Image (cartoon, helix red, strand yellow):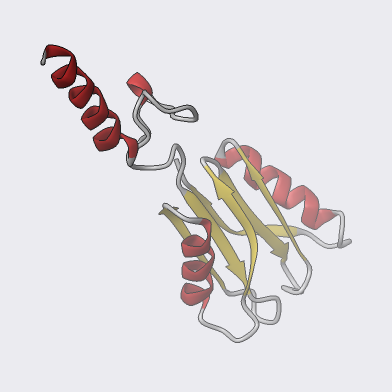
Length: 139
C-alpha cells in the first residue's frame, strides 16, 4: 500500500508540475529548475518615418511582435517602419539634420553606446551632421 501511495504521489507531482516545466523534465530552467513565467528580457523597438523624421518607440514588451507593432502605432504615419528592435538592451536612431531620409540606427547594452553608434552609422551615409532622433531601453 505504501508503494502504491508513493508511486501515485510521484506520478501526481510530475503531472502537476509538468505543464510549468518542473525539475523532473529535461529542458527546464530557472531557479530550482522551474521555468520563469516572464522572459528573461523584455523587448523594445523604434519605428521611423524617413519622409518626415517622425518616430515612435516602445519598450518593456514581453514579445518582439508587440514591441514592433506598438512602435509603428505610435509613429502613426504610412511610411513608418521599424528600424531597430532590441531585447534587454537599448536602441537608437540618428538622422541627418537637413535630410531626414538619411539616418542610422544601432543597438547596444547601454544607451550611451547605442546613441554613439547610431550617430556614427548616420555619419557614414552623409557629409552633413547627424542628430539623435530617438532612443529607448528595455531591461
